[in-house]
Length: 232
Image 1 (tube, rainbow, N blue to C red):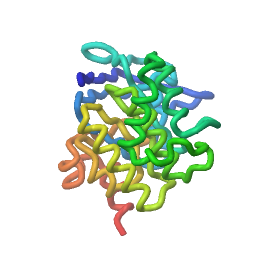
Image 2 (cartoon, rainbow, N blue to C red):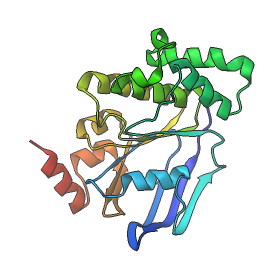
Image 3 (tube, rainbow, N blue to C red):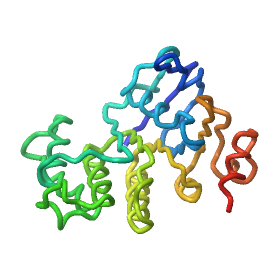
């Protein structure tokens, strides 16, 4: 699956007179897992919403090379499920993506199988646990075979077992060819999942380095302070 390089140029975003993203410049390579780290309120979620097109920048540019991805998806910390069956949640996403009615059911069942929800296909989705809801959200996203998948702290509210399940699904989605752009506050998770770390502090990117270099020797004082504060 072809994916796209994402380039941010002097990207800014203001809301109610407050600058939340401050003249950000970055190049996110295709095929990578880029994890956004930073303190609460640093701007991680806002930056991803800008990249995904849910927010319009106040200034600057967002460019995809060679072309904007035809298929991209975003999974949130608290996913919304529709008041219908688990299977119907996925077929609905496929309908929105323009998939033919004939193909939807088989594709939806395959997606549920991949995330471990095949046996719950007929269950009323609002009765799912938090971890199962996140698995369903990932199934909806994966079903459309996105070129790029944005994930906004997808395990923040989950128990360790559910979080491990979600991490495994993210690994599988990336292995299938999808570019991953994800925020997290979990340093252990970042170590396990990241190829690149984008560190954000007060709306500015202070560091963008390979994950192994970031954790071995962060270059910015903001990142060093963050890592030091997170150590037990």
